[in-house]
Length: 163
Image 1 (cartoon, one colour):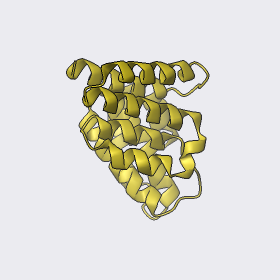
Image 2: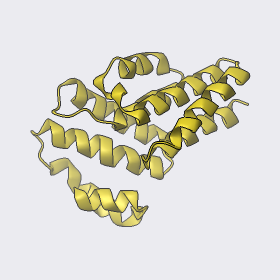
Image 3: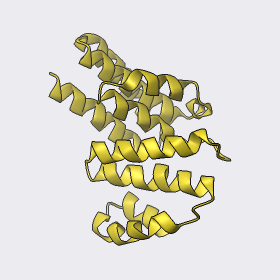
Image 4: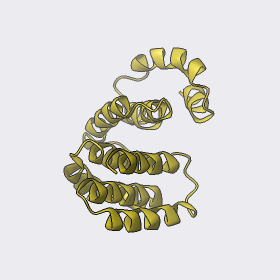
C-alpha cells in the first residue's frame, strides 16, 4: 500500500495502475485498511487523473467504510463535500462532514469552505462564492496537505463551468 501511495503522490500514475489492480485483495476484512485504500489512495488517484466522477465514487465507498467504524479520524473526508457539491447534491454531504469528528482537521474545514463557495456560485451568488473561496484559500497557506489544492481546483472548475 505504501508503494501505491508513493506513486500516487509523486504523480507516477502509469506505474500506479498495476499496483491499483492488486488493491481489492488487500486486507478485505480490515476496515482501517479499506478506508485507507479508498480514501488515501483511490480518491487522490482519480483526482490526479482529473476524473471527478470516479473520485466521487471512491469517496462514496470510503464513506460507507467510515460510517461502519474505523480506528482513526481521517483528514481526507473533507473532499467528499466539494465533489458532491459539484454534482448539485452537496448539502447532505457537507452536513455529514461538519458533524463528523474529522472536522478537527484544518484541511477538512478548508474543503468545506470550498464546497460552500462552489454551492454559492452554483446558486447564483458569485460575490459570496468569491469571498468564501478567498477565505478558504487563505487558510490553505497554513496547511501542508498535498491534496487541499485539488479541492481548490474542484471549486474553480465549478466557477468556470457555471460562470
